[in-house]
Every structure is written in structure tokens, then in C-alpha cells.
Length: 267
View (cartoon, rainbow, N blue to C red):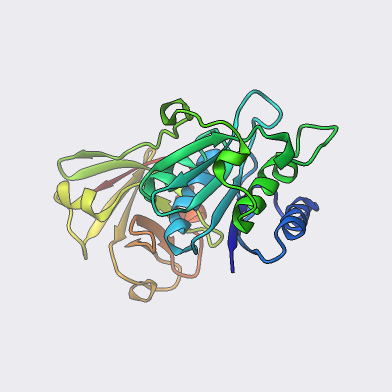
């Protein structure tokens, strides 16, 4: 069975996700669609890219369809990429696909989706997920088309990169930011345990978390059960990055954090 793994910022209020499912089902009825998430904040390319990167190693071989596309209808390109292992990616050329493609070893070929025979004609230009990306993913998944059938090859260095901030490592402290807030209110940072080790901060200690003018003494533990109900904790999350959480509560509320907020972890 072939697979299309689908991520977007469409939400579930409107019919958009279902329509793209329908397009894929019509063009590739044997293809199974896996919904990664459709809850990416509208137009938040970086959050979409990070979600895709967190997920990619757990997804089956096939086609990745990612649509977080604030530039839809403009001159931004629609692209498809193939990696060394044969995974194909379809989405806008705005940085959304870049980190996940890099995680899979980088692209061996990238094409611009320009072949009108591989698209659904439409009077409007604002639903590329239905008219351009969905058909391309379906045709690739079914084997009815290869990348070369979808458009002309483009130079890899012409594709829009996504600049992801790296933490700043200093003696006894690491300056990073809140990268992602999940549905439970847990806050993932862009700081890894190896960054803290370089700074001389070891595990199973109390870490000083600085956010703006506020400071919090937070234990670095392995599991939620090592702190009391309503107490904060710092731990290595399922993606291998340092995350702030509150047992039975929300770290975003406790620390007054949001995606993109600067934070410092100090020993």
C-alpha cells in the first residue's frame, strides 16, 4: 500500500482537509492518507517545518504532502523533492520542506510543479492544496507520475531555506527560545541536553530558568512523576530537546511563555 502523509494549517472547521483527501482518493484510490496534523497556526511556516521534522522518522515511505502556504497565489513556487532513500515531498517553496528533507539526507532532485496536466483547473488561485499539491502527491504515490512528469528541475540552491535559530552556549548558561508549545501546554526549547553539557550544566540538578526579568528554579528530572502536582519541571522530551512542563498544568501559563519567547537555562 502506498502512503501520503499530510500536514497543513487548514484546521478542521472548514472542508479543506476533506477536499484534499477526496482529490487523493479519486486520483490514487489505493493510497492511504496519514494525517500528521492540521492544527498548525495559520501561516506559521516554521512551526509546520518543525512539526514535520519531528514526525518524519516515524512516517512510512511514500509521499509527504505539506501545505502551510501564506504566499499562495503569489510568485512563490510549488515544488516536489525526492531524497536519496526515495521519499518524495510536495509543498510550497517557502522553507516548509527544508528541515525534513535535510533530515532524510537532502534532496537528489527538485522540480517546480508547472505541468497543467498534473493539476486541477480552477478559476481561483488560493487553494493550491486541492489544485496543485494534492494532485501531485496522489500521482507520485500511485506511480502514475515521476518528478520529471510534474515540471522542470530546479537548482537546489535556488530553493528557499528555513533559517532555524541555534542556541547560544556560554559558560554555565545556554540562551535559547521556546520553539513549540504542544496541546498540553508543554514548551519545547531549541536547547538540547548536549548544549547544556557543553555549558557545564549536568542532569538531575536544579536549573535557573530566566524569562525576561523573571527567574525560576526548576528541577531537571526524567519524568513528570518526580515532582508534585502543579510543580514545574525541566526534562528531555520525546524529540530529544529540553522542555518545560508543569505536572497536571500548563507551562505556558506557569512561565508566561509563547512560541518564540527567549529563555535562558543556567546552572
